[in-house]
Image 1 (tube, rainbow, N blue to C red):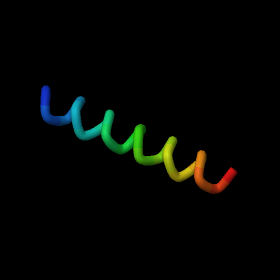
Image 2: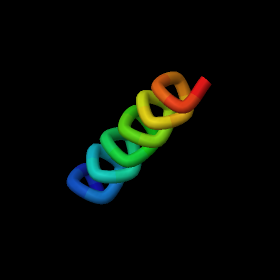
Image 3: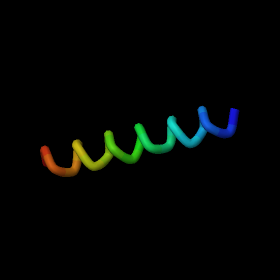
Length: 23
């Protein structure tokens, strides 16, 4: 479960970075 949480966190951060670059 720890790995799943870490993976989800990385995806969330990457998504936020992509949104920030678009805007």
